[in-house]
Image 1 (cartoon, one colour):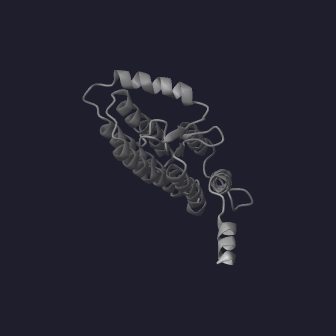
Image 2 (image 1 turned 30 degrees about the vertical axis):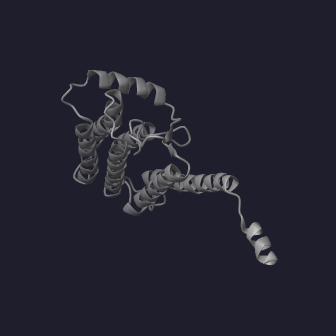
Image 3 (image 1 turned 90 degrees about the horizontal axis):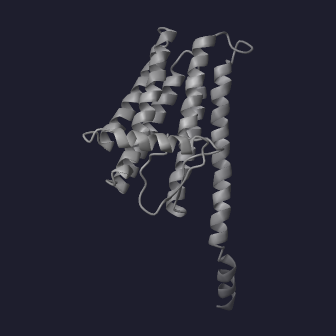
Length: 238
């Protein structure tokens, strides 16, 4: 989950338009100003990964009882704190390591999101195949974001006015719904409401990837018009 606190290499334009961005930024600045000096960005990154393991464990262990879902919910809070404050703290203290931070942050994001979605798919509430559709959508959008950094110098951190924080809140709500409604027989005895929700999210992410790819391609095509006609003319002359 690419977060507002992500460190990015110098010269990259970070595009962030999620609903909670301003409120979260004020909160993160306050947190950074009160963190002890011994706390480092790398420690916070590690803490965020601990939260991801908690989420994964909570969902998997929910096969033994729904009360384990509280571990997943706590994991979301731990993951938000660590993964949102690591880059923010580096910038607050002016100790950024742009390339190192960018590489480590997004590598951890990929692993953490894989663990979260895999955990959901290994729970008794969502089938693994449906969860993998959502993971595919996330990975495709990640690929688009990283390619945009290379070809446009832009890193898009939100889509449809929603970013990582809004996504976490949505997943917490989904987890609470799991506790409230249980596994159940599903619609038509085949697909559950949770499968439908997670599958729909995955389909939306894949659709966003297709639309963003088309928009970026058009933008690049205008910036770099085809020179094939020029080549044909030169070939005819020669």
